Image (cartoon, rainbow, N blue to C red; front, side, top):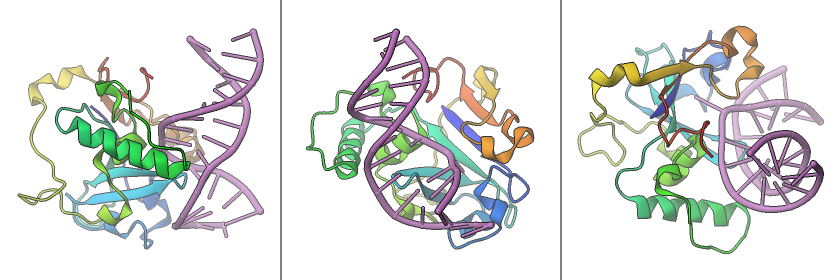
Length: 177
DNA sequence: TGAATGATGCACT
DNA sequence: GTGCATCATTCAC
């Protein structure tokens, strides 16, 4: 329900801005592949490589609407939380619609880490895969706004409305919580 | 209800 | 050594 577009080496907000490094090499390959990176030493964020081979463009999955496997999502969150601060595991009372309402939360809910980088998201039967879901004819419900947390890229890139979300959806990262 | 802060690993200069 | 495509907790009001 919420994504951000990153355009490649020229996009100063993209991890591709330093060229193909060990971490970002997969972005420079063919599309339909996962790029999972660790941010702030704590959160694993899921991207889909989208550009043609060599373009290094990608889409960050910032929030999803949980539909199935909510118990697994709670387990993933509890595990990451316990690991983060040796705090004891306790019941996760987060409302269903907020279980993956942020890029770090998506990674936690799906139990992802950087080892998922390179996974083919288009392979039938893959453990992590893209499937057709939301109706294309509801495109008018999608709203565009500036990307979150990319001020370091400078006003030109930071102001581009490349964050796309379903207007008013309860599972977004920003308006709620 | 909102602002400040701490946690924490790695890529980069 | 610096800062980050973040989140939960704490503290102020």
